[in-house]
Length: 455
Picture 1 (tube, rainbow, N blue to C red):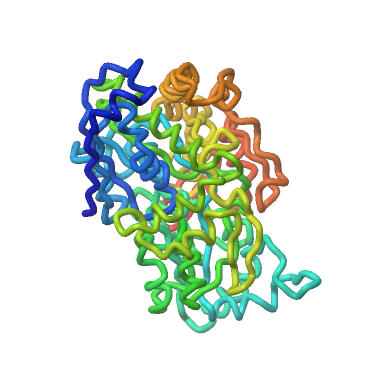
Picture 2 (cartoon, rainbow, N blue to C red):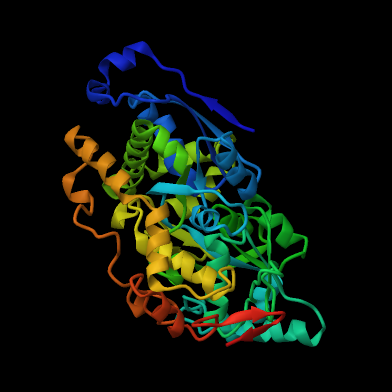
């Protein structure tokens, strides 16, 4: 484990403006976990810029081996909080996998993921991909261009395997979404079969993020969905080609969250507010002045105690562009968003999208009412804590009043059809109607019995 221990400097305490109205903390020594991905940046920045210190917090950051170890650490109290997959607090709270009540007062980012295929698969996809005038592939690339490759594998009696990072990860759901939008079935889960491969055309399995490139290079998988820098690493190593970013899949989609045990928030409410304040400040710093601080953020993240990848690789996505094939760099200024577009506000509609995907693929085995989706979202996502922390920052002249959605009811406006690859709009207020609109996936009263969809 990498450990970073923050020590309080007395002179800083005397001069820091935030200390003038410091919260009375119930607990000031904290340990937070993270996975080596660039979207852990708010934690690293809050540490390195002294925002935790400004709140009187002594923080230790620890890299975790995988998402399950990280979740277990938060549940059993070894970690006070963590950089989490957005699906983890939701799944734990509804009892899918390990059961525990985890909440989030802070969403860590938007976008930030990509789907990469091996060089061999890419060469087989190319004849089916439309070209621009300059001969480069036209983006976004549909999974329909992958379908002939999958059929070729089937004809040869070989499974087409792809990697994702965890069963309730954004990456699992984004990869499934992309495949289904292109007419490929990514498979169902059932209570008796948690592989997620029932009736699958493409077989998805778990690989930890830093191991994705090596697993691809070994030929164990033919592609993967992961966060950065592990798509760009494939480009630099010359072993694979990213075919789509999640920004191209669903513009400004929610990504990671900061998760804490509900008991922690109840027992240490002021500490929870202080942590949220520090993280909001970090997010503001990451996006302010048109990403002016991103080069410094890249240097921080490249350190071995954080992501530990080459700065050049991290910069390829963190500084406003993304490289697909070697030399094919394209402007994607919002590939990583940490504060713009209300990225840090924990919207109920974001939570509900994850729950709809759990239902779509059978992780939620039985039909649920729209009211159930709303209730679970409110039980896990805590915009009230977020806005209380934001109000304190505004009062301390550390944030701008106009940057926060004070009047929100917790739901975003519906995502228009033009912003999603399959042209199907999303409205979190009507989850069952949304599920009905998706051509592939479970809906209504359907259940899985053995290997068949019933109902």
